[in-house]
Amino acid sequence: MAILVLCDHDGSSLAAATLNAVAAAAEIGGDIDLLVAGSGTDAIAAEAAKTSGVSRVLHADAAEYANGLAENIAPLIVGMADGYSHILAPATTYGKNIMPRVAALKDVAQISDIIQVVDADTFQRPIYAGNALATVSSSEALKIVTVRATAFEAVGTDGSAAIEAVSATGDAGLSAFEKSELSSSERPELTSAGIVISGGRGMQDGSNFSMLESVADKLGAAVGASRAAVDAGFVPNDYQVGQTGKVVAPDLYVAVGISGAIQHLAGMKDSKVIVAINKDDEAPIFQVADYGLVADLFDAVPALDGELG
Image (cartoon, rainbow, N blue to C red; front, side, top):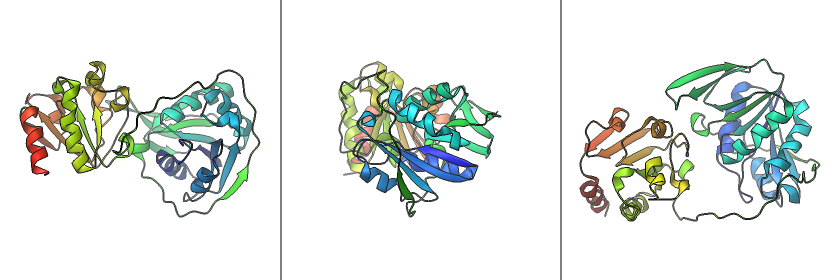
């Protein structure tokens, strides 16, 4: 049994979620190969080769893979699929974009967002915004799987896998990259931050998020938001934590002015310590919080900021 794991990367470095996907592959068992597809990605392939438990790194370096277009990368994966029993990718934007196309081209059902490997054919995944868990068993010869990164402990980086070049499949001609508009911040990336402080509808206005940003800067934290805050235009979409946003599991999650709708809880309830600040003592967020403060956030957050110096 051999497993192929698609590496998520931004063109300059390997995404941390790849190491979590490899951990899931290790639980399935068998030889593990990594696929790095991109352009000018020698350094990423070298970084991937250090992943513990990996046999080979397959490196597809061509211009058509430069921007991660699913229409070009999927045929590459399909072309090598017959040598594998499982093909895995992290359930990130990158993996979610590519893997459904691979599954469709191979005419197999994808198993999405797994949080547990029961055995080589059986996996557990959340459904109904995380309120129930489904155990899914597949009899397909090839299993296409995406992995929820927060559910698996990342493997180490003390490996020394061989790097092998693989041939490109050419430009499919189905899509073209136009441009990307990326937000930049000195704060940690939301999905990999050890501390996250998020604001909800109770923030009342986008300008009030400056209070959270001040606290975040002192804690070395990332700033997130509920969907209600994003939909209200307080902050950009890339701040959103929840079922339709980003899934996080930091060491500390601070929810400020967030009621705790199940869609938001689905994205953060696996955090190791949850702190909630809300003036409504019946807010659902308190049911999952390890520590709750019933207070007006406009008093509590500045007080916290002051204590942090």
